[in-house]
Length: 438
Image 1: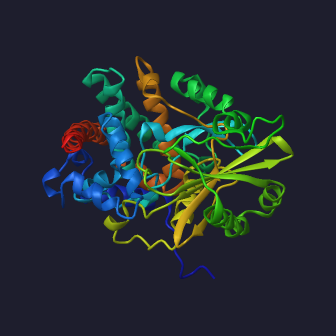
Image 2: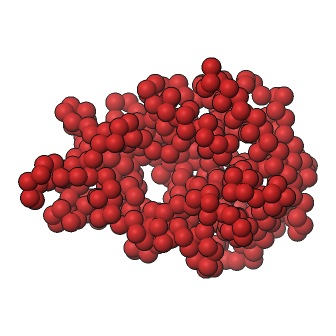
Image 3: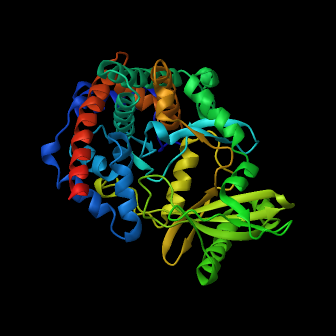
């Protein structure tokens, strides 16, 4: 029955990766062609922001002018355009899409243990694996500069990240595929920035979130709690809009696993709020729902976050049109993460796509000050390992390792690109600063 069918052997998959070097050489990955931009950076940003809430765009730009790194976080549409005009390998895996140092963090796994992994997938899509690496390398250089490192130190950290990625991908080639899918980065807790993020996550309990985000509705003893307004960052939603948000839970509940449906049914919604989150997402619609289970000491917070198309979609001719960007985000997250939020799902509201997930359940992120001294180099290696695992789970380690080869030429070229693109990011940031002063 298998006579006319062919499954590629490991050697054939590896040879395919090696053949891709003819399309773009490994040392060519240091190339940057800003002259080929279809439009200035600020124009690319403006195009990507169409359809967002105008009242919040001013806030987004005020955040982005704080530093080159914060600008970089909000400028994924610009980098997507810049990556699209340079040659790529055509070796496809699931991309995080916004791989930078603040998008790795700690969170609670379904079994309650704290894990550390990539944790932001708004831009996830299937695309050339090196696009993630180039964004991550640039973020390490920018973060290093902001944390007070010399240029050589920041560039070295980016290179160490790429070398570790390459080493780990080569190691995956020798492992059974089932073991690749569940590979654990065992030394992760010994890296100081990661250890600190895990400690933050340990403290970020649902009750801690309850104290942070809610307050008693009145001064009466035992008064019910509601969201604590902190405009424009957190604003209570009432009336017909709150009804619409709660109504979006219906389709979401139907796509959950039966045991999650049952668990959610035991919680009752108490209050709804609009929340401003992140940097790149500012201007999109983001709602939070506060639930109670077995009384006020048993809170659950769900986030319903609008998802626009990935910034890479327009530059990937083979990309399938997404019928639901919330599902795209959830599927990409599950493809790359070892363990994902048990309440991860999607829904729609008024014709817009939304991702649904838990809010702040034992979550902790890296702060740039954590990357001072030896923290940057140690964290860079962890970044490389985790991204390699994500790409190996969702792509083909044989093909990627076949392309990278046994040396460090690819890693050095990507690190150099990171330094060059960090320089360009600083120039684009200055352009935004000048515009804000006008």
